[in-house]
Length: 264
Picture 1 (cartoon, rainbow, N blue to C red):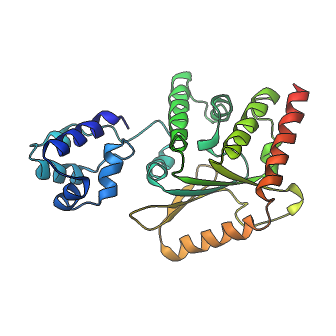
Picture 2: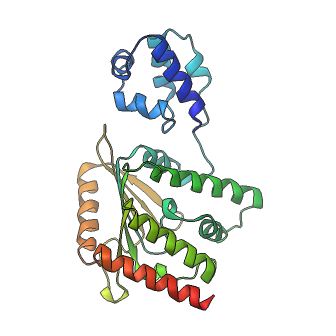
Picture 3: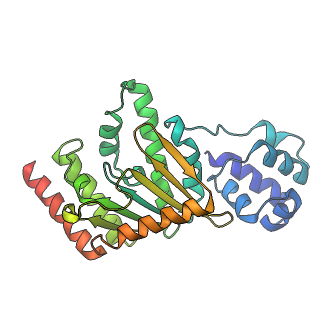
């Protein structure tokens, strides 16, 4: 989402002499919701925009100029993409590909090249831009807290070739060494383990209950029923208990990257 809309909202709020909390109280919203909109991380619903217009006496300006809410992603992922932008903590598991938020440009391009039917060059470029935009949630030094549980098999799948994999793995290494993310590798010798059936993302928020998102081949679902989310959280943490510790995981990624570099 462009920050122009958020900047304009902030300017009108400050001109009215209101704090984020005061505007939130008047518009019947949460302060964090207002903060997300002003920072460009969230698009308000039409009802939210209508209430903001009423609270700020701006006619229907905020309602009329809502930015486009849909980015270039697969239809089934759009709702999860918006939640991802709002999360304060994310824990993901992946068996096949490096999670999208952690992908380098060349790795992402190679992944998008596997779509069937094939995407046009223009559509693939649009999706690539959106995927790289998603990665900007890690630009903040601390939020969201991000953990990834990666099956060791995906480290050895040469998506895009040895050079692309070297770059991708070193990108993960650098994020870990900076302390921005945690990565735990599930050894190939582990056998069957919970959450290995597909991709799973667990998300926590400042102002709403946690949710989970699971994805398979053209099948995806957002889970918000508390009992189901709790079960998926339990499955994730059970699997995590069998994964390598952070330091050992880092060593595996470095060694695998070195092998790719030697192959190249």
